[in-house]
Image (cartoon, rainbow, N blue to C red; front, side, top):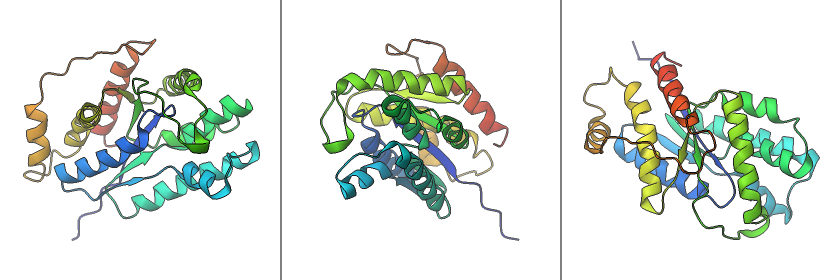
Length: 234
């Protein structure tokens, strides 16, 4: 009898503008594909394509359509892959709807979708802001967006880990955050995860350092929740 396919592992990357989400999503998907026997991909941000095609940013009534298309692309990728790394999620559109239009109508739907993610990585504000066409408003919007993301994630009790660091260190921090979850869910697959287990064993003892969060215990608690949920077979 053919073994049933394990449900796809959905990994979300969210964060304020110019915090390296796209770079991290692509690099993380490539690294995870090299470390384990998973069919791994990443799904780019639909909003960038939308703005480039129309030469403007979306209006309030167009936000829901962007959310729907971003979700559709992720779900389509999951049909053919074991791990899907999401470069933003509907939650980011909900946050910007709050910030730009004072519209909270997308919050509930976006949080429900985010609930289906096994883990959320929140990119820290430790990278310099860079202009990037129509999508970026300026460095002054990053702290409010980051604060709103934390408010929504913590309020909904969704597991997330803050990813900081410059250059290659940022990618390694993301792999460190993801590795325990992947190993926890693969205990029955002896011999298939040698590279991932070896990498994990070679890492120094993990020490939490957080100098950007106003709720120092939130990532600790969320990481513990994520591990427990994965071990329970979510």
